[in-house]
Length: 434
Image (cartoon, rainbow, N blue to C red; front, side, top):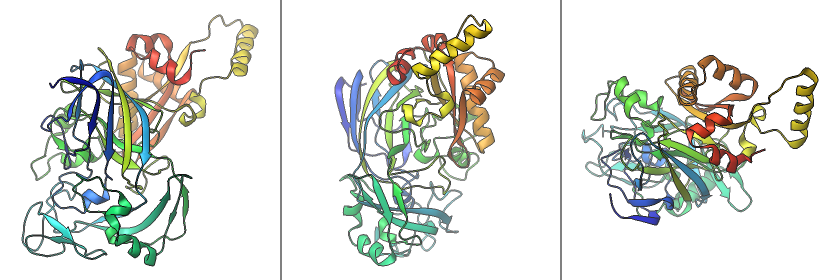
């Protein structure tokens, strides 16, 4: 491990793979800061055949003192969009241009080259060309897609018509604000414009952020749903279901509340943790229902803190207070007074001291992901599984992060348990301590 620094800046990217095989960009001190400029995820890497994952995330940064079996709290201080426009939509695969998985093992159907180098010629669906033979080579198509322009100052956006989309495609890399060392083609080059004039607010967040898995795997597949594509796959990153569950860290969450001001607590599965980040979205509702959202370039600043001995299998999230489901929001002073009066009326002697906590769950389906999140919550807190069910029902919520299988399990957790976990101070800082 290199000498730890108070600030580490990382502007180099992984090419689609995360894990212990990725050379770290440096080591940051416990309590230190990581800064980065991140390129877009999803569509750009998807149409770039040499990528072996669906994103372009940063090289990992190690954290001083983080050992396997610990956790690292990642405090998102800055999440800022730098792109002026992006494009996204619902995907279709192009048969014959991949081996088992078009995100991981792309192939030129004309010359047979695996993960060939490529270039962009012109605009439109056929713009991505194989460097070896010149054939059109993208493994993906839009079934319905759009180009959207972004007003970062006023946090609003607007989808545009075909003529404007084609004009933007002429300056694709500039409009996307691709970082200097990014290797992806800009999806703006395809100029797909099926929806024009739709307005949307912006609320940026990071779709793929966390700690490195303990085995190299495609960055977009570091979760229980997309990761299932690796099970028995006909390429070099194939693994069993047991291996996937052992190694993954669920960094690919597409959870819209992993945004500026939130705290994400991640498992340490390799020495130093290996924090990476990418796949910033300009906006997304509760559930990436279309499969992809508005991927953008951005600026990120994080602070890190090692939580010794907190052995977790997947992320825990302390959401921004306004993002919490209503039933998990801390009581106001007026509400607490009313509860105290209610307790006195019935002779109830104690009122639980608690705080909100969110467990991320992932799986092949939403049902699998929900069960995973509930089981993780029960294991880490020590509360009975059925009690977690009750708490999430009357003092929390289950929310979709992504189809087909990432959810948030939120509930009010007793403060004594938060203290035992070593995160009560983080909960207090996020929500106050009544």
